Image (cartoon, rainbow, N blue to C red; front, side, top):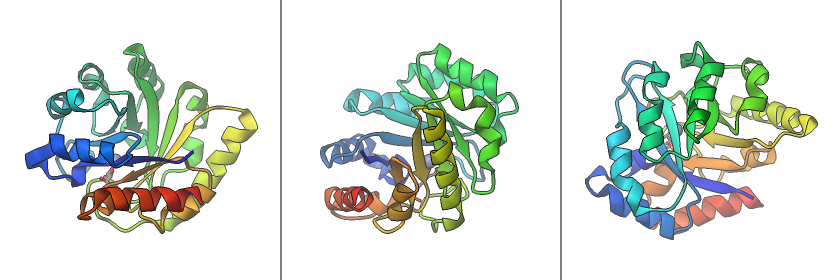
Length: 218
Ligand code: DX5
Ligand code: ZN
């Protein structure tokens, strides 16, 4: 089963509530929330207060992608603002095991994110502790970038490891996903797909979302 997680980074912030409701009605499975601090990544987006404001407007799971340093300091805020999943970057988490336990202690499902150059081996020791692995297929910081296809073999590699170990872990892809780039990722074993500009830049969001989902399911 393919899940689509529209990224509100590409939405119109002047009417964020409506933008979330529109993709929910269009068949979105999760809402992807990109939090950027201007330190770990060269851009600043928004924080837990914005998330808190849209939480009452939808029942969809909130998939919170933290692109921040010192994530431990903010996890409680995002948990209280209604996160269902919180993912942290391996590259920004010197005490990754501790961070994962902290996320779980708030009843939130923990996940880890790998930048395009970070090898799968970096997360093997904590694989049994997480619910989700997010592969970046762009360099984090901005929406609307080009998909980096050299990440696909890493997805295949992890997918096989998860199968061999009999684990139940979602594999999510983030960056440059559209109705074409979803295909090799889905074949490689990914099941959750973030799409920002490929949905929100289109006049008919529902058609765009359904087209991407269908391409991933084929
Ligand atoms: C990039 C973010 C992505 C981004 C995806 O740093 O993590 O979630 O919003 O946007 P598109 O789908 O436009 O590449
Ligand atoms: Zn993201």
